[in-house]
Amino acid sequence: MIYLFLVVLLFAAVFLYIMNNDKRNLMSGVFFVLTLLSLGIWIIFLVFRYSQVISNYPILMSIIMILSVLLVFMLVLLPILLIGFLFYNGIKIMIKEGFRPRNVLSLLLSILLFVYLIIWPRFNKITSNSFASYIYVYVGILAVYFLFLMMMFTLSNMLNLINFKKKDLDFVLVLGAGLIKDKVTPLLAGRIDKGIEVYRKNKNSKLILSGGQGGDEVIAEGIAMANYAREKGVPESDILIEDKSKNTKENILFSYEIMSSHLDFGKKPNFAIATNSYHVLRALIIAKSLGIDCIGYGSKSKWYFTLNAFIREFIGYIHYTRKKHIKNIALITVIYVIGIILTQMIFKFAI
View 1 (spheres, rainbow, N blue to C red):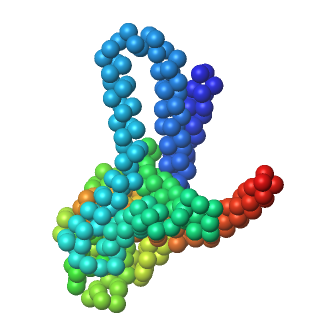
View 2: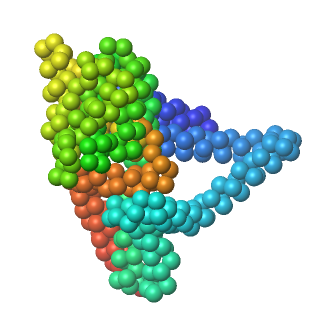
View 3: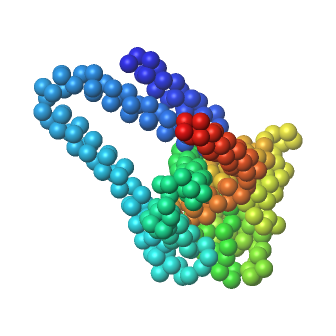
């Protein structure tokens, strides 16, 4: 028992170290989960060890039984609940936001999971020693890999919205997100409002609005965002505009150059990024890859939009870190093929 408790403390210590030093990676989510899992296992062992003592408290026993049944129930129904929720969210967002490629991601994921878990097993003899069964298992392994990554990405994103170190910021950088003619969209307005909120909590800080001009935009996003900030009462002297960037990487890089130019030579800007909650982690990972230190704050989005947006952000993260994941998939494939070959050899020798 004591050794298991030490494992809990070890995972908790690593998690707190990551959160305190640099949480801009998936390890923050991984060690958070490891801490909770090890704590849960320790509690289960504790309950079994002192079951006779606990049995003397009927109310406590009832609570433990109810929680156990609920946990098993959730685990059994999780695939169905996940498919149902993704499907509902996909329909909801298309009704609210219209049919666009970016709005069908959650619906598409629900269909893919339904086909894999329900349809495919009915039309293929996946339980037999056949090529179809090997493909089915291989696809399942890759699905688990990406679903695990997605879960860690989402959890790490949420953890990166928590800022233990709240230093006095020099700048608050708001990332652009498209315009309607020369006006900011409701989504972008939410980002700016969050940026203004953080800016007002940091005396002597400046607000930098970042975004270039798209092909279908009348003016640069940075200029439209600055106009909106002025309307919200931000003084002209506290507004900086970056109007050349075309993506998140350029948002951060070009804005960092502007921030550095407003500080004494050699001093690094102390700043935060304000964007939508689902976009925070990817923005921070990009900043980290550029060797830029910063924290993130997230604005709220409509609930039905958020899940679809998280999937889109996850795809963006996978694309940005694709070299690492290609290597991982190649390694998984090699191990799986070797495993099949060894299994076949053992099976033949056994016969």
